[in-house]
Amino acid sequence: MITQERLPMVAMPSMNDTHLEDIIIINKLSKAIDAKDAGAVSLILKELIEHTVVHFSGEEEMMREKAFPPYPVHKGEHDRALNELRVVAKNFQSAQNIEAVKAYVETLTPWLIQHIQTLDTVTAMFLVNGVSPCSSGAC
Ligand SMILES: [Fe+2]
Ligand SMILES: [Fe+2]
Image 1 (cartoon, rainbow, N blue to C red):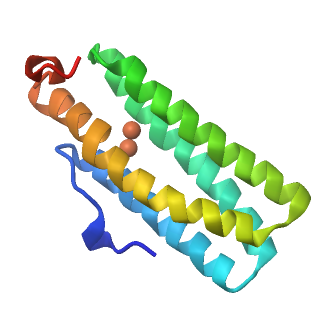
Image 2 (cartoon, rainbow, N blue to C red):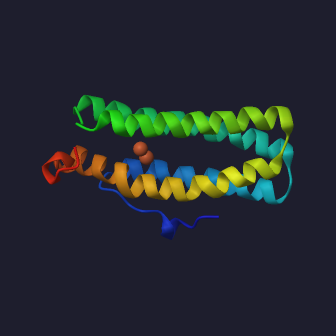
């Protein structure tokens, strides 16, 4: 479980709202895992995929519109994470292994926090304030 207080904030409120929705779904998934409710796990995994597609494509559209210099790095990390989530959901449909989903969620939460603290933070600073991460040598 991840509390709202542990969620890092970025400079763009709409991104923070999306991240909060993310942790609400992830926490719901954790509860279904603890309850060993395979039907709920399956439905929530679908919900998480749908939300993640909207979350990532929204950020990617804003980055493309403003020509964010390290766009390929951020997009590459989204593609990798979404692909991993899709594989976990697909495997769950066939194997119904709740422990595998549990192990995934244990890596998803720290990944999400780390992603928000790094790529999302510099992206929001660029989109809102025009601060380029390249000015500090990050490109
Ligand atoms: Fe994000
Ligand atoms: Fe992102």
